[in-house]
View 1 (cartoon, helix red, strand yellow):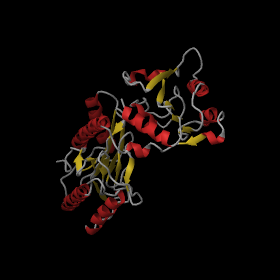
View 2: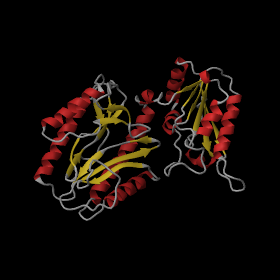
View 3: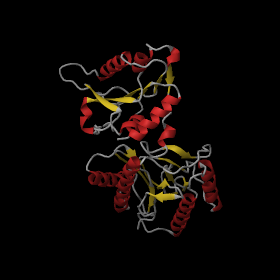
View 4: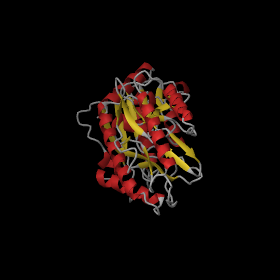
Length: 380
């Protein structure tokens, strides 16, 4: 499981003279191991601190530190000689909770026994100050190198294993769109529509599914996107429904604009235009295309239609995060490559009045793009 990712990381660290490293970012741990911690409610009182799990690397071998409360989520690493697991007691009844102390002790033990010398890499952004100090103090200042963000470029090209997980995540989002369409009625609240989508997704997947992002009526002062609330859908309102669904640590994304009433002439005209903008954006996707050039061309398309240009990104990658590289934005000159999974999401908004956004996900292929979003763009 995820052996290709670990090999890529081993090669990266070796090229940079790093023989041992500690990965603490949840996205890094999931990408390298397939392990998905049970975290939906913030930092757990039974956990290790800011990082719900940690991954130690030394000379091509990885050791996963995980909480004893997460045994059911542990993947089967049978046949993977490059990874071992180490359970840390984080929950206790007859003595004080000491998950943070326990993992510090385990890391100090493994650091003391480490056979490697020289520079150590560390993802410091997701460690507590105590954890960082406990690991860094034994090392000479020149022996420590921060590696936060190093894996992001590697994560852009998906393996077949990752694409399989992503396909399922997109299927779940499509289920959510269908349920949202049925629930989006005049008189319903945003939260009612969101609850219907969330319930349908979780029933289909048979488990709790982390979800993002927006469920927003058009008369909100900021109608680009927001968490659902008690705003009531009125006649002739539109509803931005943007869903990211997670499956085994991998996130889909997507957006549909819903019309609880019969569409007005202006709404239909605008929707058709944004639909054409999305088709145009997808036509630009191919290996060798530059992210910022796609961004510029799609914004120009909106301008030529005499609509307000969206103030957000044109698109972004998805994977172990619902927003990752490559970002389709003005500053980013990343070249698209086969194997990337990206989103494109043109839209137009008049705050407090009207809004329309459509978003599809796609796999960059050797000659274009394979669309991964199946929900109809106009849900009638």
